[in-house]
Length: 428
Length: 58
Image 1 (tube, rainbow over the protein chains, first blue to last red):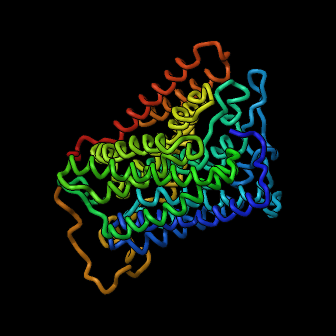
Image 2 (cartoon, rainbow over the protein chains, first blue to last red):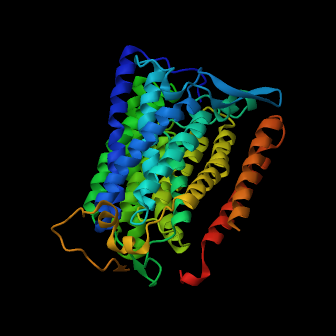
Image 3 (cartoon, chains in turn blue, red):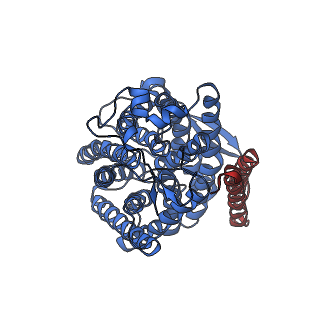
């Protein structure tokens, strides 16, 4: 990971800015995916929840998050250990008061991070679909944007100790994550895992064996995938320019790697589900497309297209088995967020260590990043959410869940002219 | 059981960090790092096991 701020020319700055402006499309895509995978009686709640969570995450990150995250070369809290100075936490000013929004690298990072933290906060929404209260999801987003995300992002993107592992501990170039496979996706995915631990399964999910509760609108899900793809191009390109010093010329490689990995992952998931269930499963195939984008994020500038295809192939193999396995273990994850973002994100982090050329010992730094995600981010996220859940219960009451979150929390449904279905299940 | 699993996740993380920070590059750091990840996998298995309730017929 580079340990000096990105040096951008005026053209580079303009292209980076354009890429950042595409990033909200990723959020829009995820919102559609989460809503499509949920029930129709909670659809409006899901879309409004996505907007509210995004808004809360942005404001909390503005207030305190960026101060903890900082950027390379900015003030930070250091710890002397083993005769070396380790960068632990950003020490910037609250409310981004130390940032001058003039197109400099730090201002572009601040702008990109406002969108990225919103996206990370939206990931758990799909997992808590149909049973997670609106206020509780906003509280959880505040925890993520104010504590978990900025601290971990500082370690990778703010010149923190994981990025320093290259120079100080001889581990390749230190932990690298160009587009946020670990920082955005895995952090959001592990938050989703914590939320499903706390919320438990939807009513009726495990009452009858062999039954699945299908999403209410698969077209919405698939359109969300297409929308997310455009945003992902911007996210990976902007991240690569700002955090790994990628040149303007490498933008084409990023685009090619993204489309190759996602296509390969989609087709792999399609074929695997076709072989396992006799017909291809649209929902898992859609998840296959997204996991391809997630897993290539970390290494998008460092691999060739054939290597991107291999990364996509592995990701496409992971998603159907992960979805099925988690379901059997009692994790009710309607949108497959844990499989796509946590499993895919961890695979993306590992892929940097396996495929990045010219960085001997890189796998040690990437393994340390995985260890930090599992040993710091997951326990912290779970404990913080568990604590808030004690005072402000996350789960809606049973009558509200049966009625649907739209009527219960918003007082109006998303599709008022349509009769509400009472049968949620689908035989497999 | 879930608390024990979370404790193992943290313990594995500490093991990985200690190996990279305290040992010299010539020492077998890789073995300690792999051991730390193995401890974390054990921790994950324990937390997942704790989540799986036997009375729900899954």
